[in-house]
Every structure is written in structure tokens, then in C-alpha cells.
Image (tube, rainbow, N blue to C red; front, side):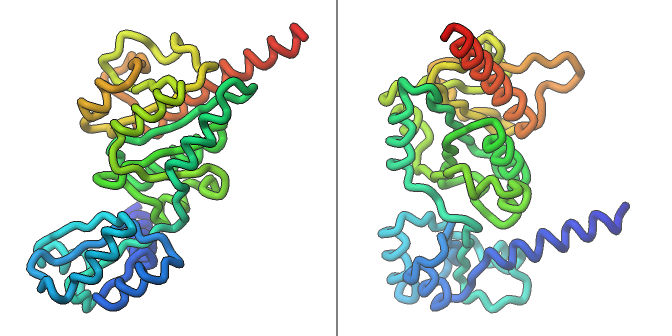
Length: 273
């Protein structure tokens, strides 16, 4: 068994390398060219301002998150690589424009296939995100929103676990998940948060309505403001000793209930006609 684990770690390391560009000029050119989506830029906290001024300005214009870290953190993640204090993480797929995705979802209001949307709040494990995206595609989700910070991005690991889902499900990044919830509400899409303390179970919600499901990470769940901004909360009852399911499993349980309800409604409509 340890050999299997070692191969998994080596594979993950190779995926990370393919997603990494380092060095001031290399990162600057990657951002400037725009051929690949830059997820984030990490800069040494002691980097000289004159060396990174142009890069910081370009990152601001393109809304690329920039993180400052101490040398030890950068050296630990890159080993012997000559990173020059600057590292960029590259996405494995292009992100959808969030405003365009919101409008395409709003256009589904009143149709036979109303919006079914997914928002991920602080889910950092790329394998969980990949698994969720695969389930989202299979269950008919029309759009997924990720926060720009403190969340997994579209790395090769995510793409590999998603098993082709990124070719079909539009994924957009937003600066503020609370603002996204407000925008969904403005478009008459009900926002449903998954939370263990909810009084309502996931089967009690009417998923045939335009709905957005918001999932939080396994440790903290939904952030407080996100939870408070949702229209309603639902829970998955558990009968074992553990408090909750893995978030990717929870996504499958809830999304397939939504799929079941919608299929049942479609069947009844056809029968009535």
C-alpha cells in the first residue's frame, strides 16, 4: 500500500509543476500574453517594489489575486527552483465570465429547465472540487461559482478528477460570494445553503424552482455571512456517529434529489399534456 500512496504523491507533484510558472519575467509574460488563465500570483514579502511594480499593476488590471509570503514558504513549495521570489499558478481551464454566466442563468427563468446553480464556499481540496464538478455536470447543473480566495482553483488535479466535466459546465470565479448570492436573488433564483444546523431537510425544499445550492468546506461549513445571506438552509440527516458527509458526497446527495424532483415534474407535465 505505501507504494500506491507514493505514486499518488508523485503524480500530484507533476500536476503542480505543470500549473506553475516562476521567475519575474516568466510570470510577467504569462500574465501579459493571456493565453492561459493565471489563477494567482505569489510574491516574496521582501521582494523589491521596483522589480514587481509592473507585474502588480498588470495583476490588478486583470483581477488576479496576489499573495505575499515569507521566503521559507516559497522555498518549501518550490524546492531548488530559481523562483526569484515570484510564482504564478496557472488554471487547467478557462473561467467563464461571471456576469455573462449570471445573465445566461436568468434567461432560464420561466423555461422548462430553470436554473440549477452551484456555489462553493471555501472548499480547498482540489479532489473534492473535481468530484463536485463531475457530479454537477451529471446532474444538470448549469453553472458553478468559486470564490477567488481561500478556495481550490481549476488546477490539473481538479480537471483530472472532474473527468471531462470542465468541457461542459461553465465555472466562474467571483470576488465576493455574499455579493454573488445577492445577484442571484436579484435574478429570482432561490439560494439554498447546506448546513448541519438547518431545520429543513434537503428533500423538503422544492428544487423544481430556480435554485442555487451553496456548499461550505467540511471543517467550518458555510461562512457566517454566506449562511445568513442565503434564503434558506437545508441539511442531510445522518444516523451514524459522524456529524456530516464528505462535501463531494453531500453535493451528490442534494443535486440528485434536485434531479429526481425535476424529472418527476417533467414526467407529470408530459402526462397532463
